[in-house]
Image (cartoon, rainbow, N blue to C red; front, side, top):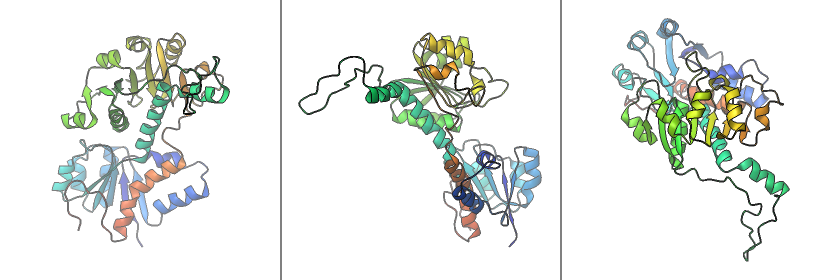
Length: 346
């Protein structure tokens, strides 16, 4: 059987899995999702290189990014576009429909995992989970609360610093797919969301997310919780420093699940030590691995995790399976699932 060509803009889950020791079950699932004797995978972040490769491609995998008219014109054999993302406003589903190419949308497992992890960090901080867990195991300093007639002893260690999320103001810098997935979770918890994004977004996205666009200064000034959703680049390196931290309301919480260098770590440490910030949920650091004796790790108002928000190997391989599941369905003569642009499958 000849191989089918699949062109992809990026495949970070595959990059993360390749070259590392894999459990047998993970290795078998990866081999089943990407059988080298059946699939020729070309991952090309360069638009020019994708245009060169797309002529013989039957499947195209992308995220929420523009599929150019030039690519559609050259893609003479293209049968399906597989697009992962929360929304697809950039892709151009109508252009693909006009070219007769079905577009399938699906939520990306890694995006969902990162958003879940960020919400877990936030809940851990506002519910004071580390201290609550410690006191449940070790007890508190004050005499325990009395036992009530029903046998319960409410807050028997007199724990403070436990708040609801409802009504808290969320600020998001960078409303890409992860920021959008987090905003949806915040909406479900009753949070009020303002965001700054480098490019304007359609009003229907704001309505779906329950979010309002604002300037960066307003987002900082009003954020009880600040979520960093930008990519790391020359413009964003160190974008949260002393001035930005000072602009936040006193007691605000910082969530960084992007990259460590987005934040001036020394300024963050000072603000946490002085109580200017109420807490930080950090999955990324500079450097990584962060030395175990780093002072950030000693602070009670920091919940650190070792760059694991994207999940474990199971999450990574499930993302690859999600991208290639419909391809295997088509190769088996079945209809793909999740067509969103109205093109009837032939």
